[in-house]
Every structure is written in structure tokens, then in C-alpha cells.
Image (cartoon, rainbow, N blue to C red; front, side, top):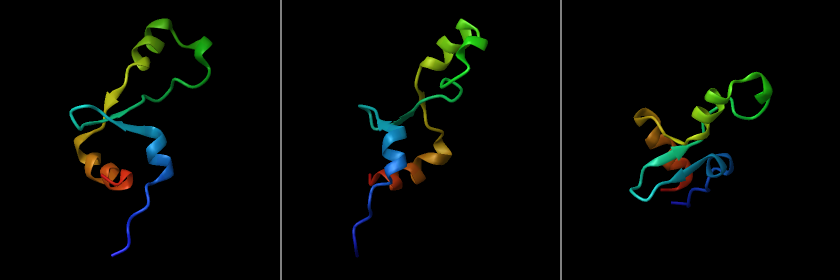
Length: 64
């Protein structure tokens, strides 16, 4: 069987935490920030864990 290549888009977007979970950035933090309240941008700054339904797919893309 040939080896799988790591998905280039996935390796830029997801990282593995120390406990083996997958972390991701939140959307809506890229542009038009002057229209968004500081409270919203602070809330969007924190990383989130990937949903349980998507973990298997993303781990395969990352070669884990």
C-alpha cells in the first residue's frame, strides 16, 4: 500500500493538542474587524476543539 500524503490545507488549519485532541481557529476573525465589537473579537480569539463528528476525517488528512 502506498503512503498517504498529508493534506496541505489541513496541516495549516488544525493542530494536535498535548492530549491528542484537534484544535482549530474560529471563523469571522479575518477582516471587517472595525465593524465588530471588541467583545466579539475577544471571544473569537480563542481556539476551539474540532467537533467529534469531524475528528476521524481530519486525522486521516493529517496522517495520524
